[in-house]
Image (cartoon, rainbow over all chains, first blue to last red; front, side, top):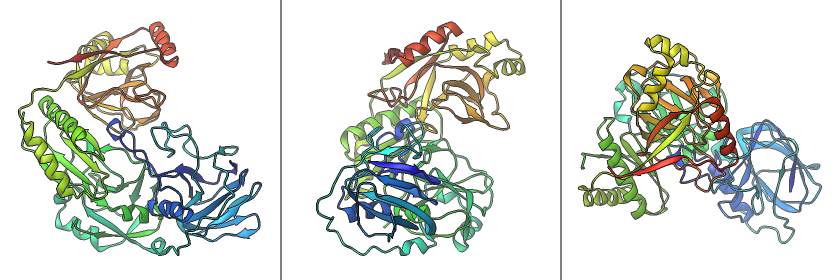
Length: 282
Length: 241
């Protein structure tokens, strides 16, 4: 079991997400940076469906009450296991009573704490991902006890070098969305010729961008929206839906981020810059 | 029924199928029908139906969107003469007491109606569920009497309680969870439209129909107890018309 001594800014348990309930209005949820979650599970020799702790901006203070192995992937945050500095993408052995403390954020925005065997909280609708009103909690809190398996046998054998280069990338890969054809030349030029700034309205549901493009008269009969859907409001504001994003919407869906694009964006924070890079589906 | 439908790629893993841009029962029924067939004949997918569209999210690691589209087209062609889909009519209790219906009096006054007349109009109509989205279990209902169409509030309220029944523009519906919202609130329903403690968390489906019936505050309190004890069951009729 892992005990939460201090929760940090916003940490939640996330796996690959909740599938099959979107027709009832339930978002997919799951790790914002799926690449980093996959890396954590891979490095530990876990099942790809295992759940990890998604840590946003400021990390928690955790105490282990079981022996296990851990790995940190995604954003680079200072992390100390008792007095030892930890590096990302390296598997460490953890003993009962060890304390894991996160410090300053160095690069990126969301880290993933992978645990050998995955965090064992109960599933709701076939997933362990936290989501308000579906799971009992939206984020971890002081005193929470996260069940894990006790494992003190052989160290996971996976030893690969994982690159964090994508944390510095500003290019976000997008496909044309269903309403792409409604864009005029002026809007297209603006979309793909300049940098956009992440607005302070950014969270697990959606990222808004500061810069607007030309306003437009189009609306849409409510229709499906997906994680990574770029909506264009009538005033010209761009809203990129993320993992907890609503399942339907009424704004034109002008672009669609690739899976890689969503993971890259998930590591951006307020005032960071991005560029949209159009890719055609082959 | 057979419509001219369009297939569009929605990113690398989803296919969007669109019907003519109209709000119509026949379209809704066709989408339901098609969605059911696709769901039973194609594996490793998730479908999201709405007013005039059906989105298929593909989880199959090897299948291409072109293959998926081809399969969908075959299925649509094969059943085009199907008759109307059966659906469920749900009866949902609503307490229109001023304790819950904080905007009912104002709404009635702006329409030159009594609150009783508003309640009568709201409970007489049979509403079609065109979509479930926005929040888990939130129904987009069509069929609100035109005189009850009312603009949304200028500034949304920060917290609308679960069960609140509202009118926003030409739509009416029930907030399935506490949430911010800009609709005019006319009552509250004790039923849980979405409940993860139930084996099937959401019984209602897109394509079903809904009728509201008025209950008094004491009746509401009894229903609330039944809902909390998980013994309440929503009244439903299977329809084949």
